[in-house]
Length: 508
Image 1 (spheres, helix red, strand yellow):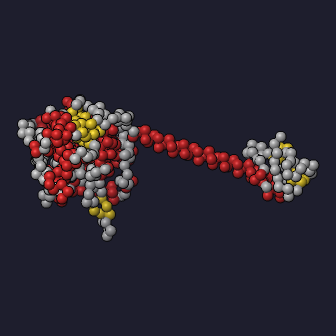
Image 2 (image 1 turned 180 degrees about the horizontal axis):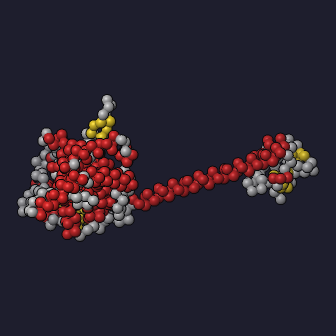
Image 3 (image 1 turned 90 degrees about the vertical axis):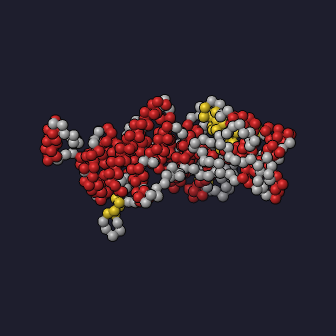
């Protein structure tokens, strides 16, 4: 038999056990379930502090106040239970979201890899056999001063610790130095200074210690050949631990490793990291196109006119070209629509080309180079310094063209022009003949605050497709010949049959 304790002061009711005010006062001691709102009562003959109880359903409670109290308790319990369940559900959903994100970013290939160690003599042999590349094309040059290099050599001579390096196995048994290039270049230059048989990939001219501070000043002028045999052997046998990215590691994992390394040193932009991970025909194409004269006029016309245009050291110009290709082929409602973040979207573009056979890559690069050259040439001839720029309302009234290229506008207008010129085979001469009309019409779209161009701050696959189609249809409509132009065209065809060689175009 279960018992319920009430305070001795609670007065009994012959029928219902306790008064309603006592019930209210001690409601927190009353057991009420959300299903039946059971109330425990006792008889007057029971001892006041330890009582028998019998359950009453909600409908048999003594008075409206008691029933109201019981209902409140039932609802309160139900709400508390639902709140607990909701909080638990939210926590589970949030934890699941965290887990999904971590699972997506985790590398199965790199998990659990051990770090091999290399003796300096082994690294020197790898360098001789060209199995160790100290100077990948995507890496910065050797920049250490002689005092810093000398101090590192002293660290090794004194048998102290040198930080790990990172290698990327670019081919079987062939490694690029991803992190630690300055350190290894300094140590190997000192070790191989007197080995004149080999050029050793243009090692820096660091042959002897110099500019050491007071603690080690006595070692200034020391060369490897000056060491005793024991010291030479110890230096050659000094081991350096290396983290190695295996040959067949997926490129997105490699990119993440490069990002991790970059986060602890000189900050590189994503496109600079792409150069390291995806270096090959595509990256070389971006380099060539970044030097395109029409592109440079579009990107910074003032600097180009003054002869002060420079390639972007952070490679924003190359990323701009990569965006054009990626959005045109993937982002505008095609096989693979754009999905944030942009960084991964552009990486996928490079990955897909990188996975192609080399001869296929070369054909694709040729096609893209021809496309890009044509699109930027026509864009510059038609829109001049306003190419790929938003029209903005001036404070004093009127409209003016923005100073910088709008990247969302670049993405969709490049794609629209590429479709018209390449896929629909519109002749470039028709664009230039209608240049003033095209300029006015694009300006009008901004002046009328066309919704598709009103919000250029955020890009989605759907928005990109809508903007591209708006611009493409607008431009195509202006390229259709009038009745007078059709008459001229008929006359031209007649002349063409007689050997004339003039250029005309019919559209739709």
